[in-house]
Amino acid sequence: MDFAWNFGVMPYGIRWRQHRRAFHQYLNHAVVKLYHPIMHEETRSFLRKVKSQPDDIFEHLDSHAYQKISLFGTEIMRVAYGFDDIRRNGALIRNAEALVLGFLEAAVPGRLLVNMFPFLRHVPSWFPGAGFKRFLRKLSRISFRTLYQPFEEAKNDFANGKKGSYPSMAASLIDKLPEDGDVNRVEQESIARNVCGVAYVAGAETTVSLGLALLYVLASYPDVQSKAQVQIDSVVGPNRLPAVTDIQDLPYVHAIVKEVSRWFTVVPLGVAHSNSEDDEYDGFFIPKGTIIFQNNWAIMHNPDVFDKPFEFIPERYLKDGQIDPSVPDAETAAFGHGRRYALREVGWTNTYGILS
Image (cartoon, rainbow, N blue to C red; front, side, top):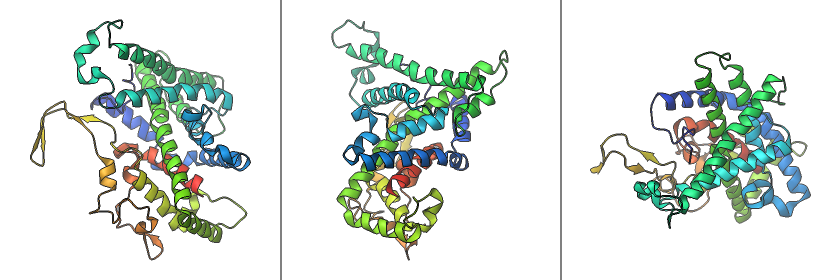
């Protein structure tokens, strides 16, 4: 499977740093605010659908399971590529989500024997037990379509002066590409294409999962839902929906978002890493090339850090009615670490929008 364009699985080096720099430039804390109008529009569209079709709430959230265009799929496609047309987004989203599902299946430890026994990659595809080759070949074709099709369409839109309603990553990256014929054009365009692709595949699945977890929490803990409703009614009133700028005045709502991030732990084992040299940790020797997982779930459910970690208690983040900065912040680990902070911003805003 050709997934080398995803810098989340690239080996550390110059090319990885180039991708991370470009990604962070267009999805950092300050820039994400430019995408808030898109998030607000899509959240309101989602809420209208839920109001008119309350029995189909999960269908509007999770297009994987129900073969419909989800809130998060449409939203992230607009952020990454600037496509406002729902039908156009539908085909592109289905490609990307098929890739996400395939990658998640292939990444499960032990799912594909070739991951445990690399020599199997040399056996022919007709050989008994080599079904993984056909699976990965199909996934490679989906990967190619997911990466190239939306970016090429975004390039055509840009060349023809067609712009989305709001800024997008693709438009900004394409605008700054060197001229055709420049020696750096191919490399810079490759980075731009890859970064836009990663924004979708890295963000859609995690935000859907967190949204579904939030709905489960609200149904399972009606007292939490009632407290949030009381605070929203007292601060925002009945005539409008809460905005992201209201969050400072809604500490209990903010605490719910933090707690659902901790309690559910959307990426329980993070992204697999591999050490580039021999290492030692806490007396354990870790040879070069070892596959390493970060146990986010255990960190977020450590009883030495979080009292009663298996209970959903938003109040753990509050002190005197305000967010307590001394409590370890689950939001900093819910969507990964380091430069993936931008995706946490997108996921956090979505969760807050649904809750509000």
